Image (tube, rainbow, N blue to C red):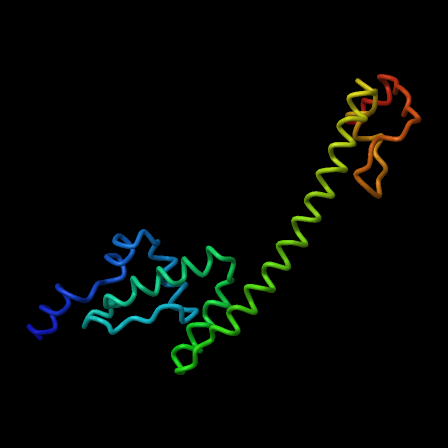
Length: 165
């Protein structure tokens, strides 16, 4: 028992100590454990999780994987493959290519949205103020798209029609 305590104090850490040293919250560490992203080396007699030095390398791997866009499910799969003695680098490269294609699509969508919003703001600048129940500029938008307001004015609403707000 004395050897276990000595080993614990020099090379094994409880989950709270891992959290403090790594900057990863205890709840996150427990979640990572539930997803098999990290595995405790053992437990104390009281049931506390114990981790060895490799947990810090594993946490760094998880963080790097997330930085390049991998989901935790993908990271768990990569780790499981490595545990089985397989090198998933080819699959990792393909997953990264897929993620890159998704990002390119999202960027194209964002650029299109930005153009449409820029056109809308420019049209609103030409119109100035526009009466409506709340804001005539928004109420004048075509409901099916974020295109510039229609040329026909909504028409001022009387104060009595605004009471329902």
